[in-house]
Amino acid sequence: MIAKAKTRWLIACVGVIAAACVVIAATATLANLPAFDEPLIPELQALKVVRPPVPEQNAYPIALGFLAANDVDPRVVGEAMLKALHERYEAGQRMTIPAQDMRALLGTASQHEELRSQFKSLECNARVYLDCANRLIAEVAEARLDGRLAVLFARFETLSRQQRFDEGQERDAYTPVAPYDPILDVARIRLAQRFGMDSSVDFIAQAANDLRFWRLMLRDGDTLVAKMIAIAGLQNTLDFLSALLRDRALTAAEVQSIRELVSPLTREEADIGEAFLAEARSSVLTDTPPLAMGASRLDRWLLQRNATLNGIYSDILLPMRFRAALSPSEFYREGGYQPLNPARRAFPPSLFNWGGARLYRNSGWDPQQFIARTHDENGRILLVLLQAELEQASGVAVDAVLEASSYRNPYTGKPMEYDVRSRTIGFQCLHTAFHPPASPDRCVVAIGKQP
Image 1 (cartoon, rainbow, N blue to C red):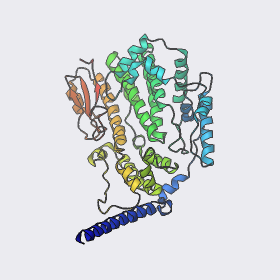
Image 2 (image 1 turned 135 degrees about the vertical axis):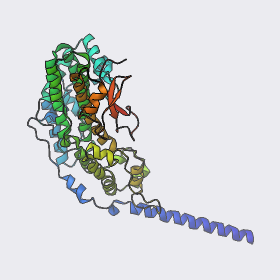
Image 3 (image 1 turned 120 degrees about the horizontal axis):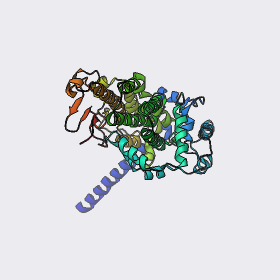
Image 4 (image 1 turned 90 degrees about the vertical axis):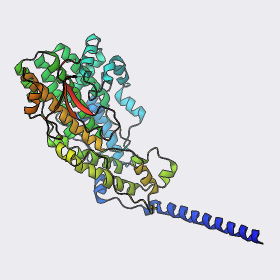
């Protein structure tokens, strides 16, 4: 009798536990049905109203069609792509272009891989290494540049002479991105060729045009990727100017012209906050939150789209917009380079948007790195200006010039640091403060031949 009673008691306990599990599962399922999703907050709802790009004097269509066949106008290709994307937006469809349609528009396959295989130094990151420009100059001097590269040179010249870089706002997570890596590579190869052919005056004029374009792209670009490509373009161009200061005996007038064409980023250029708004807009216009793409079926099942987008905007994108508006010194003083740590309720866990909360928590995205990278680049501009100042102060001790210079650490206001052994000047970067160390933690410029 006692054994039977224990058995009945165990069966009853198992039944209660099973019933509780069923209730919890049913509650979680009901709570995550679309009918129970919260509405988009007004700030995100407003982002559904978007505008197409302005076509006149716009570099963006040329960038989209940059890799078109030699006999095809890249602007015509880019404008056709924008028209197709606009029609899909108007029809409420995903804003993408099928691969076969893209091939028909371009008329050729991308040859970026061929560039990378021909010029190995294109893999050199000018944020990490001090001799990237010199490596590429040496490679180009020994290479035979083909007709395709001449076409791409001409396209970059046209691209860089435009008066605006307007991507428009009709974009979702599926929208094709312009071939920015090939554009960066072509710009670098072109500068390397010009370095070996031009007088210092002509080369400085060419670099001035490139700097103007990258700053235009940084200021006008809407997306985060466009702004980061502009930062990379700025750094590549500065790398060549730094090499020019090191490797050639420039006249006082030539050094002064470099100091006049290179200038710190304006507040408008350095504030990349609109890019975080563009990230939010792209997510709002996408049927599935980009965070959930590639997620497990369970996470997608337990995800509330609007709640996820609201949370990402409030907890990540909005704080990043505020941080982006800070000056370098404010950014440093207020710890803007540190990861966000939004308040989380540990217990009891919410039954609402389980999938979104889990994906959001495990995303590992560190958006503060992009703001730090922008301020770091501003500091690298100051380093090249300081390098030019050192050239003009020939015979004066480096430390004395650094102490008296107005080109100082953008974060602390202290003089730039001089490493006599490596012949470099620099400061502590913030890009890698909490980001995987893809580059060294110091921003430096070489001021003489490397040992």
